[in-house]
Image (tube, rainbow, N blue to C red; front, side, top):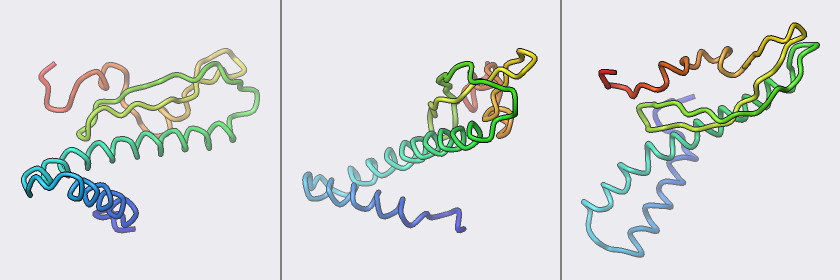
Length: 121
């Protein structure tokens, strides 16, 4: 898979930019600014959807003896902006809390995710 350009994503952005051009012919600078804002926001939304889909897959194959404790939102500060998604917390047979999505994908801890990239805190 070419990780530089995703055809479906490029086509969706093209349609949005074409609609903007048709409704408000304000010049190239405005169009470029719209594209600059749309791209990371669209990537953040796609990442959120992909994480939630993976969470559903992991839930379907959860460990024997575990049960769903809750589904909770999580927000990660990323280079694309905040990515918010819901993920499942499980209780294993011993009563320990597990979060397969966080554990399986190496999501940063709550402390790490509270810091924005490039911040000094």
